[in-house]
Amino acid sequence: MKYNREIKHYIKDNELDLETIIKEFTPYISKVIDNMVHDYLNDEDKEEIASDVFFILWNNKEKLDVNRLMSSYLAGITKNVVKEKIRKKKVDLDISEYENTLFDNNDNLDILFDDIEEINKIEKILSKMKKIDKQIFISFYYYSKSIKDIAKEQRISEFNVKQRLYRIRNKIRKEVNKNG
Amino acid sequence: MDSKNIYEKTKMKIAISKANKEDIVMDNTKVNILKRLGIAIIALVSTTGVVFATSAIINKFGPNSSEGSQRAIDSGYIAYSKEDSIVDSFMLDRYNFYITFREDKLGMTLDEIQEKYNKVEIGEKRQEYLIIKNEKGEKVFSNIGNAYGLTSEDGNIFYTATSKEFPKAKKLYVDFAGKKEVLDVPESMQEDLEEYKLKSISDESWKFESALISNTAFKIYLSNCNGIDHNEKNRVVTSDGKEFYSQARSDGDGSISVESDGIVRYYNTFSLGKLDATDELTIYLYKNDGSEVVIELTK
Image 1 (cartoon, rainbow over the protein chains, first blue to last red):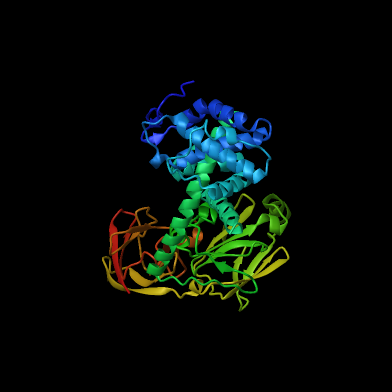
Image 2: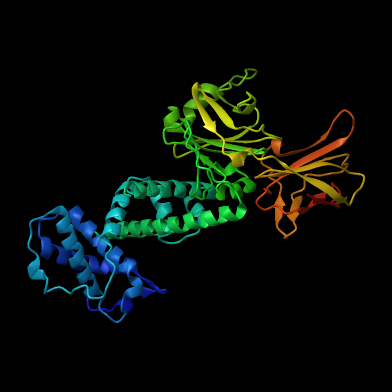
């Protein structure tokens, strides 16, 4: 794998090419996580960490230095996310030996653990949605597709698309309000 | 670790994050729009628990809702009920009525309702299982008669209706197959119709009867209008140049009739609500021979 590539190699149409980044760097992040926590966390937790890492990367896309290595950012973020996960799970594990071997988060990236925790809760709730609702939600908010195009793809009316989006937003709103 | 799973999860997190941010923006925008439009937003915490929404921009009532209604709903002209209510939301106007029921709270699916109530033999009367009346006992809505559409999406059942004129209501007494509920109607939904007067008509043999506008629709009534046609170009144009076409969703939206007196009568409903209306309106109507009749109206 090409872990020595800079951020600029992963920019496509002025956007981070997240699909490629995730495809190329999942084994790398997986290795970093495993080295830190071994079997103290289960696979589900590890996947959660990995997706948090990529989400944080995306969330900080404006702050990234395009000439720096992608792996350095990802390693720094991973270390911070793992530490937080261990703290939350109250796992009795000493990771101090990795403090100096991994890159630090010296770039003032927003890690926003509270936001991530809330998003993860919502994500768990939405994961139980019907497949079509997930597709519509992702198409609209992730891919920024128009209601018209989504309606065509899903072969449903535009009203139906709007209505499904409304319900999902309502679910999210309820969850956010519940958390204060 | 499966990178596909991780990609899916990451996409979902980003989508949630975007939706959250949009929601905050939407709420702020909404307040500004509503202030500008002067629509009363009243949180009614009442015995029935109907509250007037301050957020959510949506089409709540399925594909049958008119453009005028949709624009009004987008501006917050919609009432929501508490979560334990059989009613999810509704919108009442003098010309349009929409109500959404929660299938799970009704304890009946749409199929069960149709099986039980709509399966009638020829000659048999359909059962009136849904009746909504106002505080004076006047029937606002029934599943028989002026009900237009019925669709079910994600556990909700929509009823949409159009009428020449719905009675005004402060409260709605809902009876859905024995399940009863009383809903408070927000004050903004109790508004009177506003009238337009004739300024000029290009064919003076036609008689202008009246023109009225509600929050969601505009209706014009004519008589002695020989040769008038239901033309898709029939439209209302506001003084700022916006065009509004016929709702044309059902027979209740318009008709051309010749009664025993031989007089041709016409009325039609256009998707122009008060939000978009201007003090002066121009109506373009067409005859069977394609010629145009222009009617100018003023408040």
